Length: 340
Picture 1 (tube, rainbow, N blue to C red):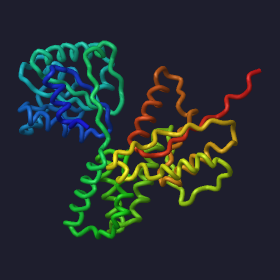
Picture 2: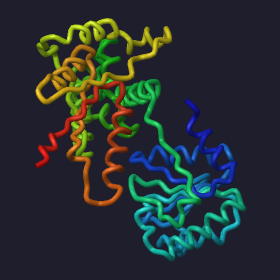
Picture 3: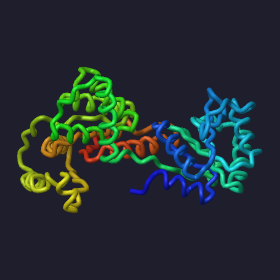
Picture 4: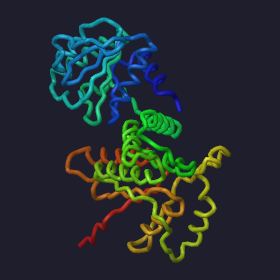
């Protein structure tokens, strides 16, 4: 996977003047931009509705006069001919004003000539049509398994240094703990690890349940997905001999040994049938057999009266599910009823 900092540096060097970063992990995105600025020897200025526009790298300075409002901050960028990086936090939701859009467009055009870049970091919000042709999206990839391991070790090591933790985790339990953290952001991982350790003063097998509860709470906030931990035992299933035999033969495909061997993991299973034939039961069976979490998506919760909202919820649901992979995903829908 390409390095995120290198991808940012490429966007900057190729004169992309306006970049949108949609993420809830604002701190990590800001850190990446600061690192890119350091390696490119460029000054980084950041704006927020509370602080206005101020320089944060290489030296932190006070707020620039007249930039407490978004209009003034964009005007400063437009009139500044220095080669710099600008980070605007939560600005997309404030771009409904046509005047602010106009100033931002002029600022972006100026940055394209000066090889400067404006980053709009926001968890939501839409880019106005007048600016869509100028913007380039940048996706923050979820943390890899190695990055998750580093965050956990760094957090536990810090807590142990202050005498707040005792490690009682076996290797097998530690691998399961790491796997359960997939799908959380970097800041969420650090918080969950801290809560797990400080909750009882130990880092042990029982902390896996804390992670599962944190993931369940995060998914509930989406209103579309529900998280079901792996069942302790496989439910009793009648029939389905071919499928159960296939699950037995492929259950080791997600192991580290299989990855090192180069074995490609299964992509998915499509089960079709009338109501009550056992589709949901088999989804729970797969989750229990392969010891994976089960994500249930309620199709009825996807629909919204506003244009584009249904599609946005669906994209967010699939993005969250991909970040939590490997997992079992089940789609639950209600019958449409008979037509008369």
